[in-house]
Image 1: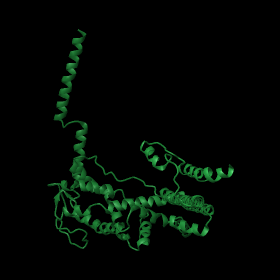
Image 2: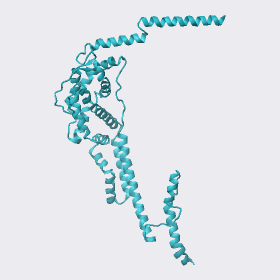
Image 3: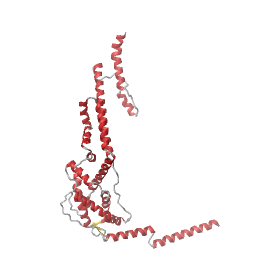
Image 4: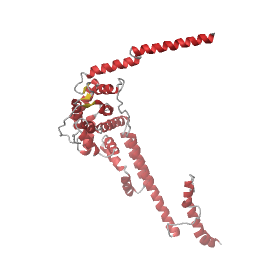
Length: 371
């Protein structure tokens, strides 16, 4: 009987659940569904006020939106061309860091270049003295790149990185959807924009906001532009024009017009942009690169001098620098060990020279002399 009662209870619950779901559907769905519809209606109300950018009837993106993008393109397009001339990102990192170094430290950096160290060793002759000088110069460089300076330089580089991402945004391909006759990188062309279906540019708008909102309105843009100008004597972008872009960004963050358009087209009132927020730290890598280069150069010089001494002794002892007496304990045999991921022979040259001395001197001259 207990089982029958339980089954009846389960059946009643199932029936109640069915009718509850049915009435919920008739009343407009779940609470979350109703909330989503309400939010989308609110978005539509807001978009009715943004007719310059978007018309709800037909979901058309308006020429006014294209004109807004075109004004940005006229600034970022030339900037993108100029930034391309700066070359690799490593070069830009170096330019940025060294612009914050005092003149005497910049001279130290120049002296720490491998080629310069090799020139210096010719004059110094004493490699140990040179090694100590290099060590002290590295300490001076490290001190100049203190925490405060490093933080500022790293921040400026991240702003530069985001600037590059912004200027590389394909504004041209976005605008060409509004005007199929638009020529690429012709910033004097007078466009004839037409309204287009918003779905056609929805993904472009999403990508744009990611790079647009990633810009920092409070960054030291003037300092950054001055650094770039001092390097190539070119204005990457007009400071006045850039301020207009930042002001436009500030207004867009307040109005969220493009955000609302995307949410409406996506039918997702919770959609939001995902700006780049990676923070690159370039100062430590810069110092380590210089230190590693200097250390390796000193080691190379020491190794070269050692090899020259060995060659000189070999010449005196055996009349040649090419000495080969061992049959199996050789570098050739080491290749076999390497294939099997084994260490191999460690003292090939010393053993070879020892055997050569034994054969050429001990077994002949020394032995005869002793006997």
